[in-house]
Image (cartoon, rainbow, N blue to C red; front, side):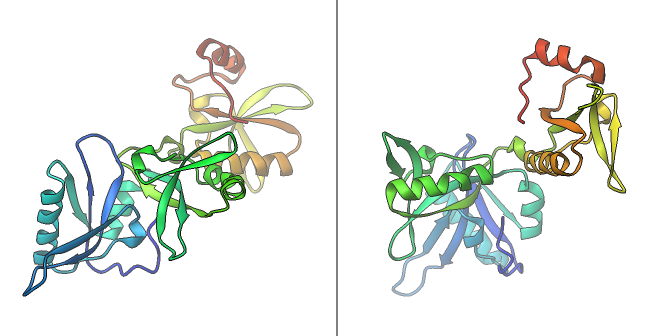
Length: 251
């Protein structure tokens, strides 16, 4: 996400490098040409590096320079608020390696035979849909590589489905065995429903958090996190639907 410390005045300029889906790049710095100096532009993968441009004339020059460097690029110019509204579900995460000058000099690619492999090409990096999953890998990567590493957010010209409400919870009574859908909490009391369309929908992180909370505070049920069904399924038909459609619970 964009750093709260960024000056929100002006607009940011960002682009997708090719017509194909790819990482979104931001303009970090721009300097116009002048006496005895060349025009200069600097790009970044990270929204937190983006430079706001308050002057439309400079913004036009920046856009032209991007098209010069990347003729097939799709270039956008919006406010920070507009960007966050448009791309809130386009977040992904990568693991970066930092050098002694506190500069990123590689992205985690993969591990093999207890050896960590890095790449300079973001196209070859391992990209995670879940921040927690990437963060959980850090200790092992740090131990194997001895490198200074951390997780950084990037944006892609793709929707990260885990950031959209495509999960739901089922609750199975430990005493009676009946299964229903979780629809929410009212005064800390669980509300259950019989039809999947009425179930409360969660993002991946919300579903995992809800699973943990309910497992701890409402122990009379067994819980499962399921992807939202394409059909409106009765609670009594859940097991058959899962079998017929090869649905795999997350938890």
